[in-house]
Amino acid sequence: GRGSFLATSKFDALITGAPAHAGGKPEGGHNAMLAAATAVLNLYAIPRHSQGATRINVGRLNAGTGRNVIPPSAHLAIETRGLTSELEQHMYNYAVRILENAAAMHGCTVKLKAMGGAKSGGSDLELAERVRQVAQQISDFPNVNPGLAGGGGSEDYTYMMARVQQNGGQATFISVGADINGAGHHTAEFDFDERALRGAVKLFVATAFDLMQN
Image (cartoon, rainbow, N blue to C red; front, side, top):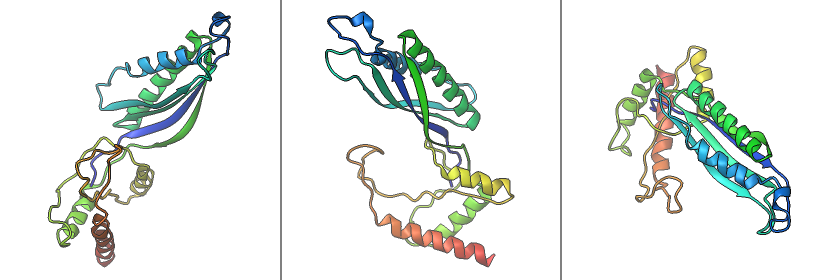
């Protein structure tokens, strides 16, 4: 079972300025690329929080139309994360202030568009232990980690987890390991041994049978 998931907000920021000839009348434009660059540097300067882990990342920045044109627009793909939903909201609000003020510094405006998100959440120890006991009976899993593992990721499954837990039920997230040939997540070389899927299906079915019988 996973002990914690980071809450997250995924959003795009569209900064709009005004074009002008970069040589003939540069002062006539409002440089959206400069506004975006100002925002990026300050987004990464957001202080960390004493109450738990926080994250921010700008995964993409596109701006401008040509080498001799003051960039009239910029698009940023951004995410914030926090150990709790409250910490994530703190990061999001801080990021919005930075984007708005960075845009204003260069005579631009900014619009935000929500692209996705997830709540914080955690597995129930009792159910996680039950899944662990089932996994120990399946030959595909020579190593079964006890307890609740942590991690820095986010998962929209937490919405379902929270709904079940709020209604008196239990929930757990099952992580099945696989050989990834030494490559990290989200790298060009990332791949995993798909034979692990066979064991995952066995575990899911065996757990369902175990729960129905007790």
